[in-house]
Image 1 (cartoon, rainbow over the protein chains, first blue to last red):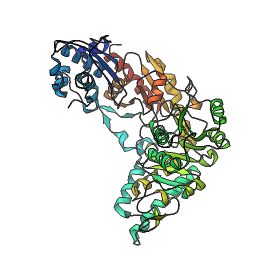
Image 2: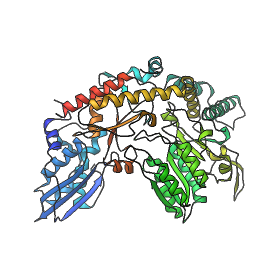
Image 3: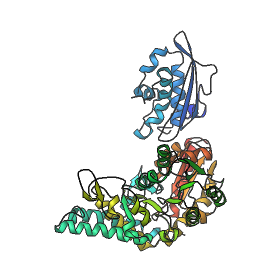
Image 4: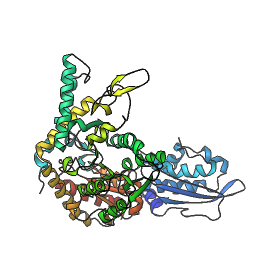
Length: 126
Length: 408
């Protein structure tokens, strides 16, 4: 089996969870990776201070799409106040694969956008 | 069959290495080309034996460095058929284009004028003009690109006939599609309409004969690192325009006399070369041009055409592949953009690298063109003299392996 393109990574790429749009939504954000042009947007519905529902949309490589899909599953149900505290190590732990420096932004784009929806901050997760 | 590669590969030391356990197949020369030992050794010899600053020292080293540096300029200018005193060393093609946008554009474009570019430009031939238009109130217009990836001279003529185009900036060869544009005809039409032309030759000079006298554009920009040389660029300009232009950057070497309040300028080309030049790089570029001249640019072009034709013949065998750019190799350079259904270009490039095959993936610094093609990114294979048909076979094999990993 490939060390990067593991079965579950490819499964999330080909069948992304929580892919699409949500209308109406409470929070939204849209951003791109300037290195490759990949784009990702997110819609979030909030209830009682938690992420009740979330959908992401856009296009990207297997790593960025799988990372967004996996991140989306973790975020649903989470208190909105906890989202800004999620960092790069957290995403890479969730992915369970080794990410080279050239693919780091691919892995982080999902969290960047989802975190951005809760904070308005477009900076890359550290 | 390959026209040049077999007897030439030994000149490129990097080709001896392995990547991920496979012999290196380098298919990203449109981004940056590998260097022959003739260039590497020339630069090493200069640093080891003759390094000094140019145009300043009265001592022997300074004299030798100046001779080597100006000798490189003269040979490069002669290679392209343009006067040496109108051939300016720049950091790269981007800086060369910015030089025109600032030193000519800011003085000559204004409200009511149009700056005309095309939908197939690299960001380096878009963004300087966007900034110029923001600063001067001129309007930025785009010539369209057809489905086959070509420009229409009829459209160009009709836009020029409106009489507002002050400057036309167009690429000689598209870095994304490989399209070879008829720049001689384009420059002629622009000249007749009273517009100044800027040609981005970054992809042309490395891979085909270029005669700047015949093209007769007002400005022609290119860069050395794609032409087997180091990262230093050139701007060739029409003498009358260069003479009347203000300097781009102020500093040492570009002046004639500096008073407390103002200064006068050095002669061409030094008026546009403020500060200490990238001397070894310029000398290295001279060696790269000598190397290309020795092979002969007709042969280089024939070789690129052969590899492009072979790639266009072999790649359709890969399931799910889409190729972009002009179908005829007569109108395209050695650049083959492609996508594969179900696999993002980044993943294609990553998996090709596992097989030792370097291809580019991304938007190729041409986001407006990507949007036009309806893709966020493409993969791209591009060739130079050191590539051979086997490299295309290795790419086809690597793409087959990549599809297997993705279970396609």
